[in-house]
Amino acid sequence: MKTRMKKLISIVLVLTLGLAAEVAKADFTFGTPIPVPNVNSSAQQFAPSISADGLELYFTSNRPGGYGDYDIWVTTRATTDDPWGTPVNLGPTVNSSAGEGAQSISADGLTLYFSDYGLGVVRPGGSGGYDIWVTTRATKDDEWGTPVNLGPTVNSSADDWSLSISANDLSLYFASKRSGGYGGTDLWVTTRATTDDDWSTPVNLGTPVNSLYNDGAPGISSDGLLLYFSDTLQNPRPGGYGGADLWVTMRATVSDPWGTPVNLGPIVNSSRNETKPIPKISADGLTLYFGSNRPSGYGSWNVWQVSISPVVDLNGDGIVDSADMCIMVDYWGTDEPLCDIGPTPFGDGIVDVQDLIVLAEHLFEELNDPTLVAHWALDETDGDIASDIANDNDGTVYGGPAWQPEGGQVGGALAFDGIDDCLSTPFVLNPADREFSVYVWVKGGAPGQVIISQTNVAGTGRSWLCTDLSEGKLMTELMTLGRGGGIPIVSETVITDGNWHRIGFIWDGSYRYLYVDGAEVAKDTESFSMLESSDGGLYLGTGTAMEPGSFWSGLIDDIRIYNRVVKP
Image 1 (tube, rainbow, N blue to C red):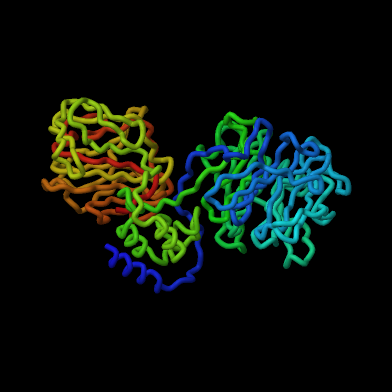
Image 2: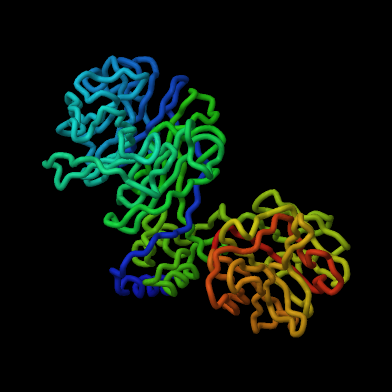
């Protein structure tokens, strides 16, 4: 194993790099958001800004011990493995009797940008509304100097606030209500050629980033390719999860335009508000910090963190090993989204050394895959319940199929009689919602029989995996929508020959694929935008109407469904 791994790595390292970047589409998962330990209190705290080395976390708070409305505080740690220390107020040189906050620390840790923040009280010497200020220090051991207003080129008579500085200190993103925008609050950027030059006249980021709604609180990633931001409770963007949400827009290079913003989804966003600025991602791309007023047991607003993990188990077997490395080598130099896992979290549009590095960091790890939305191992010995060991989609057995504790390909299996045996599950997913994959071991069967089907509350449904009526070839009846769609795809591979076969179906958002024993046996000849919607539960071992002839006669084992593309 180790010899083969070294050989594979050697092959990869000598492959040609430097192909043009495409739009990144890497798979990643969020962990469970938690309040940042040792940072939150019974007061309000939000607007986290993490230093590039991960050892300082600045935030805004109105906790006791401050100098005005809201103040800027910092907590530090000796290493990224240590807990955060007791937060310290930045003191009266930076903080004042007015409000300060919504800050952003430069990559070298020597420049801190911030804005007026609070109940409308601003620092003297500004341009009218909330303004952007900057303070510097000679070294990290020195005190912060007297803040300087960025002046009328950057600041306006409107509110200019809630900001984020790029890693090279040459682009400053901020929110503003100034004229020339698309909504109540828009995202703007001011740039400069070098750190010795003056800031330029701010430019509106335009559509599709800005909208008719309120768009603010930007957070730029260290590579400059991701821009996180939030909408507001007063005028949120459509497509959210209840309150104000966090969004992200991406671009292939720093010279390309920003893409259409994407909501970060229901793990990060809640029914409450994730709008207190500013969402900031750590320099290594593995942790997102944000403010939220979701319940936590601390104050009304708290600083939260959520881990970001690349999906590195490319074949979905529960361990990262040489098989995943081989898949990456197969797609080297392409824009295959499954393998475009580096840099974390969204990749860079090409499978190259960056992706190899991420994969190598997880080699030989056994993983609990959060994209595995259902897994019926079928290892039970008796009873009428088949447990979903990944989630809560336990199935109910009907007709009396026989448990085979020692007769499966992966542990036990379930033997179906082809007459009335089947397994019914709750709703797992809608094929129209996103990419997904399903894999299952089967043995036996006959032409026209069904392995997995999905019902529909409208009284219809489709077979996800089944055999054709004449020869027992693997096929799917899941239909694509659009011109040229509406037809099943049939492979040339017979699976009813009495041998064990691991069969699979993949929908990658454009094409349907069928797999048998790790090999692709069928694929759409043209791309489509969507699969037909279905919102019912699943039947395992029969068709959607339990019609005679559709019941499976043989063994079924280890059914796995993922909400992502999984290559065998």
